[in-house]
Length: 295
Ligand code: NAD
View: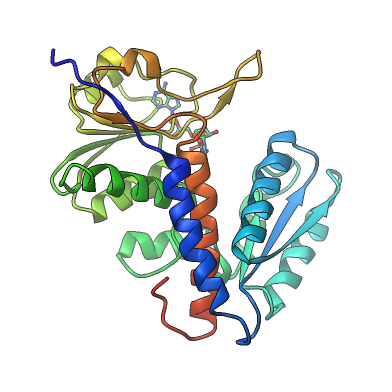
């Protein structure tokens, strides 16, 4: 087996580049109806959601997006949450709406997400946004998978390569990560396999892949020795250990010297997800206000 140094794909640095472009684009909105605006709906007191929303609001403030948080109690009824989203949907001053998931269990997530108009669907979770992706039409793409594409583009560009013809394995088939991820890789001309909890031999699938995107939500599921030498690995998973530290779906230590490049956890996909949300919000504002969508 060829031993090679495994490069860390610096999600923080690449996210900072995306945020800088957003900041410049936001500045161009001055005097033209105000800056792009993002409304975040949070229901209940899920601690992780509170941290994620805080990070999103902080990034928005940094780039000049006008962001607001609409917080409802954990006991809020379906009607109350729907009324909040409906009001934001009808408010012309709002360019993007994000409903922070997960919602408390008594709420019907699909019905609430369904109220976000497609032109404000900055999370890209809506049926029409996903349909546009399937159909190869323009639209707002889900932030985590779109952010992963930016990371992969950087990693392959650094090698003078592209994703075209590469064998890509996506581990996970969720609506918000795995499925859109597979479609974006397909659109980039990769040869895509999707593995999931019922897949027969994950290790063998991993061993065949040039690119592995791990989004199973299982700590250290992917072992380094499963990887093909030279694989590029994106670790979407994020888990808090008992000692408070974070880890991903990939056992990064055992991938050292086998993978060509890997994203760290933290500092890989997480910052890119937030940066992509900002990019989507600027893009939504540009499209809604009838300007060029080239953000
Ligand atoms: P999910 O639970 O909705 O989906 C997990 C998927 O993984 C399912 O499709 C399931 O079939 C598959 N799976 C589960 N166990 C498996 C196994 N043993 N082998 C193969 N496949 C298996 O999760 P999700 O919302 O898609 O998120 C996945 C992970 O990504 C989680 O750890 C989540 O916290 C993380 N995440 C991170 C970010 C970020 O910005 N960094 C964003 C979204 C999700």
